[in-house]
Amino acid sequence: MRRTGLMLGAVLLAGAAQGQPAPSASAPPPQSCRLTLQGANVWTGAGFERRDVHIDGATLSASASEGAVPFPAQWMFLIPPLVDTHNHGPDQPAAANDPIHRALLDQGIFYVLNPNNIRRDTPGAPFGPDQVEAIYSGGGITGMGGHPRPLYEMLAGMARMQGRDLGTLPGRAFHEVSTEAEARAAVERVQTQGASVVKLYLLDHEDAAHKGLSPALFRAAAAHAVRRGLRPIVHIETAADFRLAAGTRGVALIVHIPGTFPQKAEDAPYLITAEDAAVAARNNVSVSTTVSVAFNHVTGERLARAQRVHAHNLRALRDANVNLTAGADRPGASAIEELNLLRATTLFDGTQLLNIATRNGLKLLYPDRRIGTFEPGSEASFLIMFADPRENWFWIDEALAGLRAGRVIFDRAGFVRGFCEGGAAAGAPAQ
Image 1: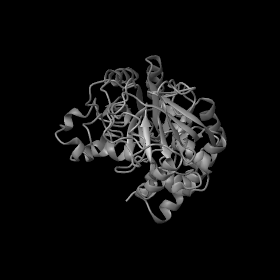
Image 2: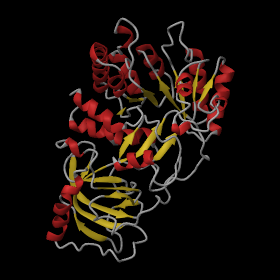
Image 3: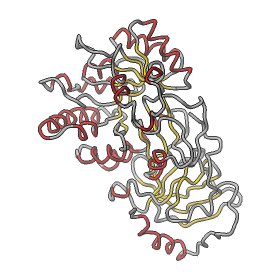
Image 4: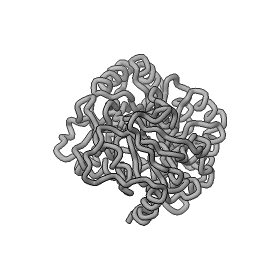
């Protein structure tokens, strides 16, 4: 049971005590949201600042729009929606009430990156209020027989792949290449699937037995992607993989930190240096951490070793101010699980964690959109919380209400929907 239900009475009393009329259940919904949250506590990236928040349809405005309803909001804590930057659950826009999409939305995760999926949707398909807004990469580019081919073959019988002929997976779920010409052609196939990003696989590339991309194939694919306007995202396993990805022009995101599955006897191949982290920061390369992969797959001394490696790498990335984002990369899990594990390392304070959960992911996914802030002109996309989640972390996935581009995604306390129309986010770009 969600705790937000326990707060409903207090929330409604807070509004009533200040003379705020409850919305009429019989009144027709407004055409768009015109609402002023008076004195709300809004997240700035450094802390909470009290100010009026003027919602004017899909965006925020500098002053109240005509007909805007004032709502006393001194008890509200407003943060940007949560972002999951490594989630393979929603593999395409889905029908209303799809359980995977709905579960993410209910946690306050409105934006997702799926870094490798089987593209089945029509490019540019719209998303609605029951769907996460997702960036889908389509199939990643790997070496012959390399990951993710074995994984997809193993998962071929799962529900989300029912009816899929294994013979159709090459060229859709993954692209195997052995020459630079094939790597460039694979980039172009990914783009025809409607993707704006392309995933490239480095699988311990210094090992002669590796099955991922060689440095030459990787650089050829990354350079061709950048020329065509695609943003490369890179799966890595070792510190050498990280170093190659971080130093390659145009790479937007490294998924995983070294040491997710330490296979070598020594830790050294998985430990990045301060200079590695500094290069990533200078090149504006984000990192999706996925420490939860080891947490869910190994135990005992193997887990203790992975945690030691992770702590070293996370500390280096933190100290270099690398843009860190959260994603669990596990079936049924989400960025929430990853954030909880990052918190348990005690390497990050509440402010850092809240930015990893929200602004950092939005900066990565939508660098050209005004989103994730509460400044005039920014998209009216945010979560309403009852407390500061830095001090009361259990509220991180217990928002009272959530709006995306001025449309109500959920409203557990029942006080926003009466002022704001639900429905698809008008004018929001589809992926």
